[in-house]
Each structure stands twice: as C-alpha cells, then as structure tokens.
Image (cartoon, rainbow, N blue to C red; front, side, top):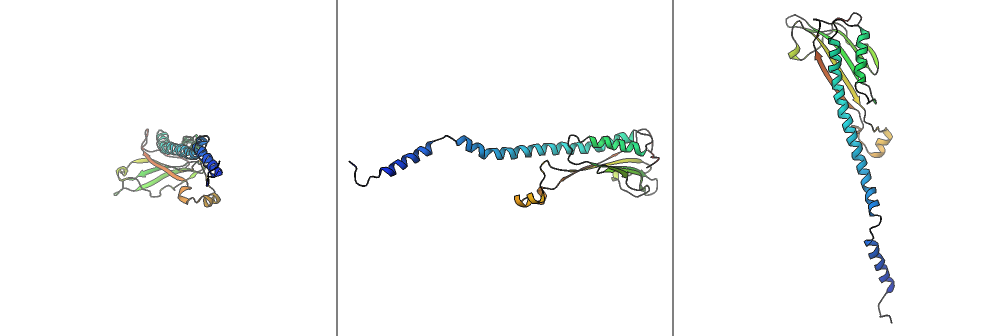
Length: 207
C-alpha cells in the first residue's frame, strides 16, 4: 500500500541524478578537451621563442663572420663582397621566413685634428638585392674608443625583421581582437667593427 504523499516518480529521478553524478565515464575525455588547447598554445610559444632566440644569435654572428672574411683580404672587389654577404645570409638557415640585410662599410679615420671619420667604400644587400650604400667621402660615426687617427675599420651591420611562424591577416586580427604589437615582426640586429688583418687598408677597386 502506498502511503499518502509518496511520489515514486520523484524518487526515481533522484536515484538517476545520484547515479549520473557518480558516473565517472567521459571525465577523461572532457579534461583532455579542456587541456589540449592550452598544451598546444604552450608548445607553439616554446617553439617560437626558441627559434627566435636561435635566429637572433645567428644574426649577431653574421656581423663577426662577414667582417672576419673581409678583413682577411688585402684588396677586394664588389664580386667578392657580394659573395661574402651571400655566405652571411645563408647563416640563418633553416629560418627562411625573411632575409637579413647586410651592410659592409670601410671607414677611414683621418689624421686631421680632430680626426674625421669618412666612408672609404660601402656595399650592401637588402631584400636580396646587392648595391652600393654610402658614397665614398661621406662622414660617418664610430664609437669613441675606435676613433683613433690614421686607422682603417670595417663595419658590418646585420639586420633582420623576424617573422613569427604564425602570421595573422588583418581580418584575423580583428576577429580575434589581437593588437598590432602582437602581430608585427621582431627587429634583430648587430653592428660589428674589425681592423684589417693583412694590410693597413682594404681598397675596393670597383665599389
């Protein structure tokens, strides 16, 4: 006999609710679905950061390597400078999302009082195009410690606009609410000075 006020339907629903709450099947799948996006973001961030740091180191090495090769020559020509800069460009491989710009400048510090710092010759590669840079006789600057009268210097400037592996279009930036600071390239660069190894100066006959 059923007592007054008893509702077997409600009791059954409560029993099912308790069973549902105690059922652990599918929890792992839900947790996995929640954690995977975070793990993927961390993975890509770690990979991007490590490649950016390694590329920055390689950009810095371009200056020392190119300057070292140039200063070993008693004389030089444009073809030699272009070949050396091509070697410097290949240094950043396997990174290939942008190319470095390299400028080689020969600098003569005069014996005047005070000494003048003048460009002897200059050559550069920018966006894969080789050309002359500063005109001979143009005034330039060097660090105070290197401004020694009568000296000859080779200066190498290496620069790269590092492009992250994940590129964002303008439309994607708007949809995701990304700011420009999160999507621009990262500037990397180094300036290196070295004196001639085998001669007092390094003339370039056709620069």
